[in-house]
Length: 145
Image (cartoon, rainbow, N blue to C red; front, side):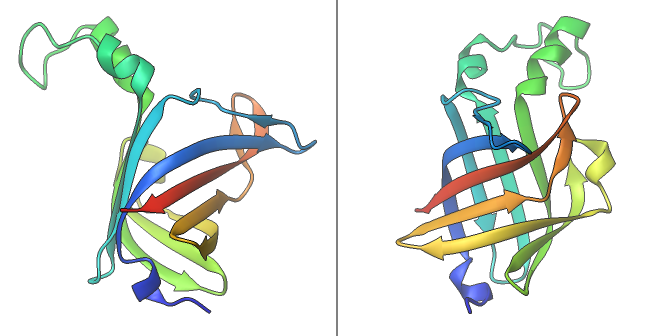
């Protein structure tokens, strides 16, 4: 069984898909998406994902101030996912203990991911969760860089 050292390093996102209970596969953010996941030897991790279509179209804050934005400018930041914390490997799962997150509901939670490793790729799959009013699981495939 893989250990922590098999996870250590930087991973680039190859695909991001969701699957509904009935097996329907979707790409909730499209296929033009970029992300990086880093697992550090000290047990810390972080992930950053952005939808590329929106990356060039995202509104720059007119104020130039990170803390002052219009409602429209704030909405343009919704096409980003990011969190960080500690991780551990346990019984075929990687556990992400979240300390900071773009989604405040995740702070203090542990996100459990089923994983598979092979050929320089890491696949992470969530447990079923509510998204867009339906129960879905998400599958992300990463390539070691």
